[in-house]
Length: 169
Image (tube, rainbow, N blue to C red):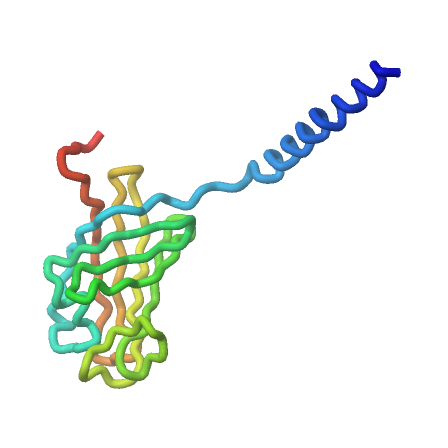
């Protein structure tokens, strides 16, 4: 009788959790992690067409433009190197990265860029495609300022900066 109780306890406390673990691993086997983009990036772009646009000041005024990407899963935060340390929320979906941020006086978000001279709400958008592997990743895409008819999209490329003292593998 003691042996039977011991066997049933073993099955209950070891076998059932192992079966549950196997089921969880099988159910999640199709999941993939989002592309890792965290770190400091330097941006190459010509913002000359946006020089007179007050709502584009975080991009135009911080030359050379750099941003830091903080990542939590597929959610990104782009922190620009402008004087206000503007933070743009973004998302990574497969090989694509996108962000949208309301600027100007017409925006109602607490994180809006408070630039004088912006007429109504404008949306600063970025869309980019990720290429490369690990530390050699690059972004290529466009910045656009929706709500500004005279603002053409700006093509850009960005490369991840390696920490001091490190070389590429």
